[in-house]
Length: 414
Image (tube, rainbow, N blue to C red; front, side):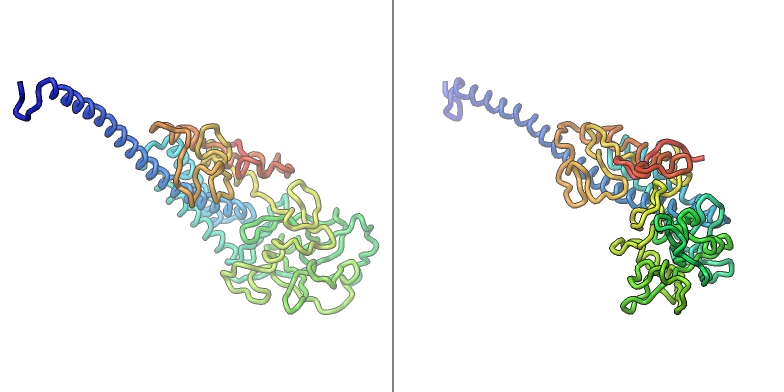
């Protein structure tokens, strides 16, 4: 029998079965495609949220590091207490954000972490601003190592001020054995290394330890920053240890004009807000190392190269307390964020994610749960884990910064 279409029943049934089969196959395919599209969209949103959170994290960590460089070198007072409190609050909110990111599953979770980091950033900036105010905008602070003697250029009356050490005219420097010779970092007074005192300097967010004579140490004890002996080289003022024609063991105390600079701002301009100064300009330049060891390395050895004397902040300031920061230096297995360096983070290790390449997540993941592995994305507890920057009050060579994170760790803040 023929149907209305001219096809027999035996011809219609196979066509119908084929149509049903195609429809049955198309539905799961469409569902899979929709699932994959949703997953891709989810991953892109999470990736974008993570990059924003990580940028904020870096900014907060930079702010905390700046505060840690200065806080224990500033004379104690209510404003220092406020700066320290703001820094601790920033660290607390950074830790809270780390805990959220550790188990984040959705963009809303990353949004909560971002909100906390925005607060932490404001608190770190508040601490930074107080420090700048206390140093008069110079970014300079000095402290006699192992004592409570601390000074910044800003005096109690609000003026910027530092003092030079008096020159000793009858000093017979050649009596000092060559293997014991050094000189005061500030005024160039020749002296035995053993007779000089280590002084911590914070300048431009960096911290170093230099050797100073009794007169300049006395200035710090009185609350003043010591001035640096300078010379004019090619029309530019440079510290004595970069002046090619000057040797303190030959020229100190033998007449001639003596020029000193405050070590901050311009050489004669005390304007607040200057970002570069005599110390900063020269301490970052190791192209012309001085003839005598003027600096102390983190291991406690006298060194010639100023870049070898850069010090981490002190232990009691570094410690965040408990599980702090984001713990990105551990390199956890399976984490798409593993191997991330805490201090300098231009890209993500293993090329999984970078600020300029956001095309892939975990290449081994095939399900929604593997892109962000809870407990491995951020494993809170290794970035700043106190206890090795300074070892029992002294510098432990090689432990100030470890290979996995910004600062090594392990204690809690009081």
